[in-house]
Image (cartoon, rainbow, N blue to C red; front, side, top):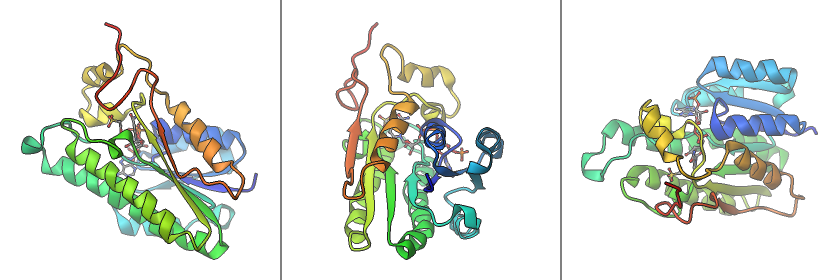
Length: 249
Ligand code: NDP
Ligand code: 8X3
């Protein structure tokens, strides 16, 4: 396998599971995140098959500098997995925090754009490429107190469609994976370190595992060149919508 995959949000959850899945399949990986210690652990596991980049996706200069400075062995990027993101807070719109709103729009939407902007010249030059955007069921429907997180993921849904349209002539594949409830550090971040509250989100039913999403990403990027998985929605069997989850008491 000589393909290079750049994965944002590689230090945790879906991103880390995707790194481990794809590295195990022989892809060369560029693992990105802010927590250097966790990136070092991945590097210890995968050695020279993995390159790490430390940046905050909100910092467009840092994003561009890191990606423009990739070593030859990790250029061009063939596959981009736009995964970095989180929810911050779960409050009604009338009492939401401006800091949380900024974080979600700056990371989930603008960060995804900055990374894509930095990677695309390599794909355009090589005349091929594949972008997987990690959206959410929150990008397909809105739920109580989800307001700005849902808006950020609806924006990802729109950008997924827009990228596919604009990059059609260039032969670049674009598709989204939109998960429902996956047990990761997502709820710990949303509830600002309240681990009890976070654990409650996944109680009484079997949530998705990050490896389930890595499995779908692996499937999407291994289709033959004429096949593009444009938009996938995946939920736990116990989940029917953002607000309907069958829990055992
Ligand atoms: P985690 O909290 O486990 O992982 C989030 C990842 O995003 C971390 O690696 C984190 O790295 C990275 N990240 C967050 N903020 C930044 C930033 N400012 N700059 C760079 N990297 C950042 O959550 P998940 O794995 O669950 O989330 C991954 C994606 O999946 C997100 O886009 C999320 O919205 C989406 N998703 C999650 C679902 C779920 O139920 N868990 C369901 C649907 C979608 P670091 O902190 O080291 O920078
Ligand atoms: C994460 C799933 O339902 O918490 O995107 O918004 S949800």
